[in-house]
Image (cartoon, rainbow, N blue to C red; front, side):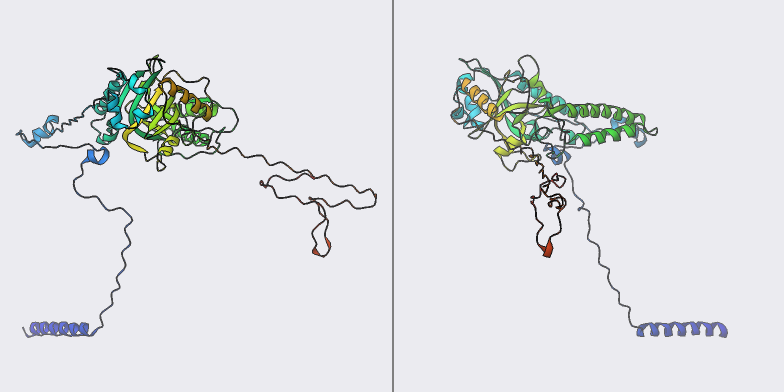
Length: 447
């Protein structure tokens, strides 16, 4: 017992001495390491209404509990846990009278006074109903993907489509009231060998095209050929799945057709040429709108001449080239429309396209649209004149020829030339002619 008691007392004393020493040791200074600045965006918290987030759809949601069987049974029954999607979309009524047109575009009746006589008792084109039928079909096809549905803006993008004819001249007009989205597509190496950029969904071609006139390569050809090569290389791999092989087969066929088209044709350029886009359904039939038909675009108190330059999807209307968009609103870009309200009037003149197609003649465009305006009663404001903003091709720098001067005396040294100057004494400039440097470093004068 005495031994056990002694051992316990020794342990207590040793512990007390250790604590006393720790109290007299200077505390270690802890240096705080600065935290790095977060680089990721903050996490979005809270409940998100997916439809409103993506496309402006108002969501009404309810949860309806029903009494069921045991959980094991209900887990395998596909009808025990169901989400029913029901999208209600009000189909708008088209404007029919000149007064209704004026509510959207107050200056329209004054700018084109002949329109009043052209608006008959039932002027609405069947294309209006067809347009909204297409919109509804697209909604049904994509209903399970809320992010793929038409936005509220694109569903209600058309105020009216009217089929008009002047009573005296019998000139037919297809009138659309809509907003204005931006089309920046198109390229033409003959007129502009340098690309204007490739925004999202950019296409280097337009429906309006003509055979190339020079050997200048399309500025987007190399990138398209590179895409084709990558697709062909991947297709040749033995490790890809049949599904991916099917996708690549379709992509390769499309890219080959695009390469062929870019090598053979020139197209309109969205940044420089005034044109509009119409749904492909509008171009169907004998009396439908055709590529190349002339157009008057009316916004505010301005009348802008254009042509039908491209064919777009069937579920939306109201799209013009970036050239027109920036004239109406200088802040317009491929990602920012110039007019969001349905206040743009497009007057398309079916059957007026000139053949064969070629580079736009802006003077002819203005004259032709002025004549068409007269055929529907005339315009009280001048039709806009487009200036050619495509820079002229660079002027080739002429080469400078310099003939050596031969001395009359057989023993005399040849006179100095630009290519081989003789040394000048005392640092004076070399004798002989001087030539100004050319703009191209590769251009050299010929001795």
